[in-house]
Length: 129
Image (cartoon, rainbow, N blue to C red):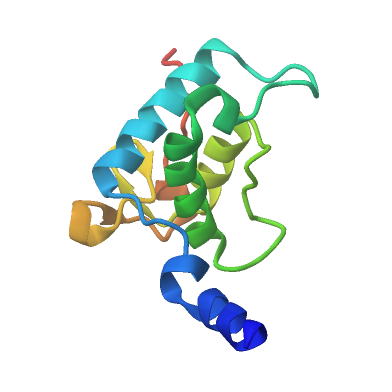
């Protein structure tokens, strides 16, 4: 009796899938992570994780979009222990849809297709010369 009940609980979508974050939550988390990463660049291996600096909900929004951009591969995946700077690097490198300077905003939420890597942006502000 316990085994079928446990299987049923694990197979339930509410248990198996992570909470989805809205685009507004994601863009707010992205702005916070960008502000933090610009003020505190990673210079050592003991840098705090993005989850420690932003909180679980905001970091979860970033990790969710990073997981979608990674497309199921493990070498591009973002982890909860990563500093914000590393997550932002991966989002900028792998996301194909952007809204202004924010990667991973889907077209139905106002993002535009930037499949060409030359059209993608950079999370750090550009230094105009």
